Image 1 (spheres, rainbow, N blue to C red):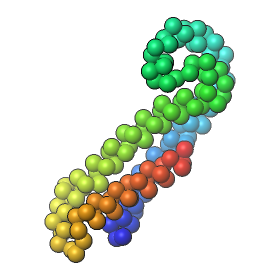
Image 2: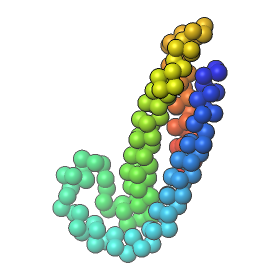
Image 3: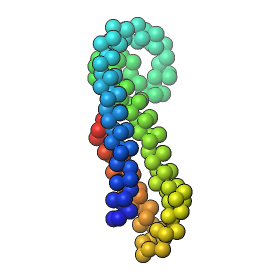
Length: 136
């Protein structure tokens, strides 16, 4: 469990920063809604003929007129995209960090199997992503 705790400790500042930034961003999105709701009907009319595109992305344009629909669409698009990019960066960083700092050889000399090292790093990345999701 040392590897797990070490990875959580190493990524704590980034995790909190991403969570706070995304939370603040969603608060800004909610404050923009009144200005958006005035133009929602015009936007729905403009995107009305793009039904094949909206069906492909599973977007219901008619829901954008309500606060829940607007927040849901912004959350789905922006938060999911940001968390996906962060997850890819985190996953690559967890393993490449050992190579970059030349600590993988040292780590593998200890009585810990490679499977356990990767499993603890995977568990740490899962916990980190769950903390970010809970911040939003």
